[in-house]
Length: 463
Image (cartoon, rainbow, N blue to C red; front, side, top):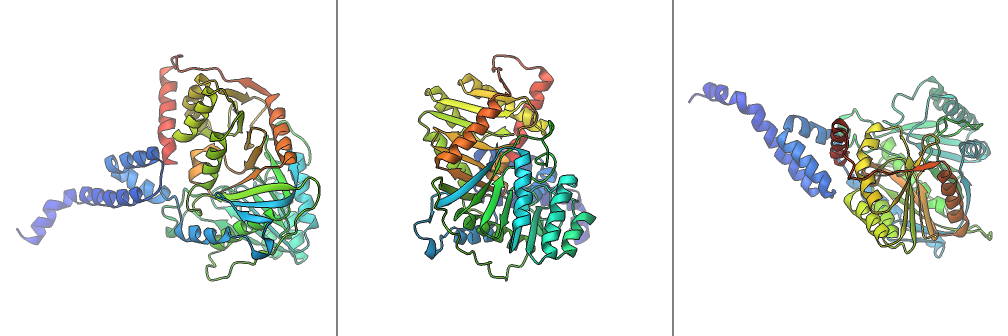
C-alpha cells in the first residue's frame, strides 16, 4: 500500500488513536499522584471514557503537588538555632511558645486592627489574600498601603490570580507608583500553569515589621470587614499574633512571594528571631501550611488526628462541608460512641452547588446523632475547630475537599486557655442564631433535587 493511501486510511481514526494514547499517558501520571481513591476513580472515568473532555480538564485542573515548592517548604520548617526551646518542629507544622494573641470576632474589630497595624508599621508590610475587593474597603486598605510605601516602608501585596482576577485597576496602580509591589499568585493563562490552574492560594496573612501577624478566614472587602457593623456582613474570625509564631508565618509568606515573583535565583529573605512574650496569658501555637507546597496533607491530618483523639466533644464551624470518606466516618464513629459532635454551617452559603453536595453527608451525620446547626443570620464564613476544651483551631481552610487537598492553606492550632475560651465564646455566640438540621435518608427526595444532589456530589472529587 502506498504511503498516501495508508495515511488516508488511518486519517479518520488518527484523532481517536491520539486521544486514547494521550489518555493513557495522563492516566499513568494520575496513578503516580497521592490522591483520595474517590478522586482517582472520578478522574479515571472521565479521562478514559470521554478523552476529549477528560484529558484537557486534567491538564488544566489536575495538578495537586509542586515538587520544587515541596522541597523548599521542608527546609523552612526547621527552627532557627537561637530559638531552641521556644520553637520546635511538630509532626504537622511548627510549634512555638511565648506568643500573645488578640482575637477579632467581628468585622469591625478586624478592620480597625488591620488599619492600625498598617499605620503603625515601621519597616515592612507583607499581605497575602485570596480576594481584595474593588470596593470602599479594598480602596481604603490600598490607600493606606500606598501612604506607607511613599514613606519608604517596604510594602508587598500578594493576590491570588483567580480570587482577585481583574482587580489590578487604577487604584491599585497607585500602590505601585508609590513604591509598593504587587504580585499575582499562579496566573491561569500562561502555558506554565498547565495542571495548576486549580491550585489556588487561599491563605490570608498580613505581617507587620516581621513581629506581628494577622491570620484567619477573612479576605479584604466589605463582606468581611468595615468601620461599622452591618447586617449583610459575613460572620468570620481572625486574630493578631505577636511572638515567635510570626517567624514561621514569615517563612511561609517569603516562599509564596518568591514563587509568585519568579525570582528563583534569589536567596530567601532572612527570618529574624522574634522575642518571646513574657505575659501571664502567653500562648502556645502550632502553625502549619498545607497544599501543593507540602509533602503530605498536614492540616487535614492534624484535624483528623485531634478529632479521632477526642474524649468528650468535637465542634466544627465551616462555611462549606464536603468531607472525604475518612473524616466523615470519624465524625460518625465519635457520635455513635457517645461523644458530643456539633457541626455549624450556614443555612445557605454563597455557593449553591456545595449546599447541594453537602446534603448527603449531613443526612448521614444526622442519623448518627451528630448535632447539625444551621446558621440563619446571614452568611457564615468563619472556620474553627474545638475539641474537649483542650485544643482549638482557626485559619483559612474550610472542611471541604478543595481546602483540605488542593488549595494553599494556612492553619493555627491553639493549646492555651485564653485562645481556646475566645474561640469557644465565638462559637457559642453563633449558636444563638441557628436552627437544627432535621432530614434523614428515609425521606424520599424529589426526583430533580435528588439528581442535582447526586451530580453535585459526583463532581466534588474532581475539584
